[in-house]
Image (cartoon, rainbow, N blue to C red; front, side):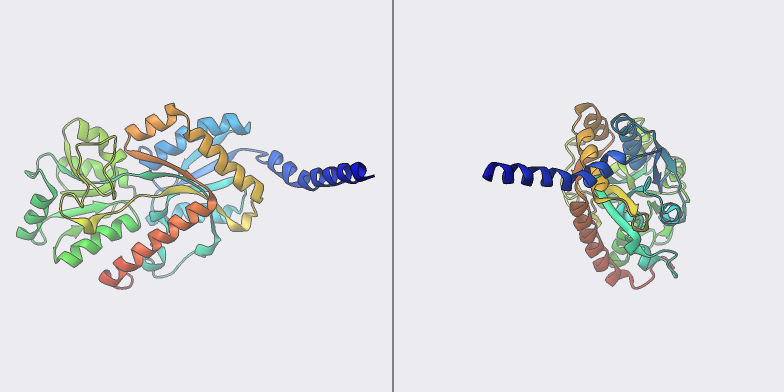
Length: 323
């Protein structure tokens, strides 16, 4: 009798798991789309395209990448939220949306509708200048800015990356003109030509021109030195800790799409598996990225940490700094 009760309990437990297993196996049912708020060639774009190949094989459905730059990330966010589709995701730096409540006069979406699904990586953000600018260190650059108030231009990626640089300039009493770009990748041409003198962006964007000697990377903005770039100091090493910023990249869903929890967990697990492949991790590392897969909860916690950094910067800049 006891044996029969045990077998019944096992059978009941197995049946109780069936709906969850069925949901996991049922997803995806069609093409999966990663929407990116930056243009081709950015670190996020490179990462998404590498992962899309592996995830296509793992899921048995095509995984496509759609670039939707512009609007400080709002265009891509709205594209995902208005789709209300559990097969359409935002593949993005957290910096592309965390700053929106401070940067926009009116929010076109509810930030609570963005649901973290998986942490993917940390993009290495760097400070670069044209090779023609005769500086070889961050301190030399800032001394030049101080000597020429209002005569030098700067650009940055969207969101928090932009605010970090603006906050540092204001706190240090430095006067530079900001140049805005719809697509941060396009700013690289102006950097090469010397039309902008400072560019804070993903190292992946400037890497090719840096290797060709047309731009000079002065420092990385990460907390720690980047193993793949051992000769580059951090901004703290260079004596400017106020420019420290760790890029944070992950996948988010539209909460109204009602993505099943088991599907969410599967996405995070499959991304972790793909990133464990030395071929993929090696290619990402070579472009100046740090592989850092994590669960939905870990990604959400990291976003909250970045939001805390932003709050401290806003105290320096004041409300609505972009305006």
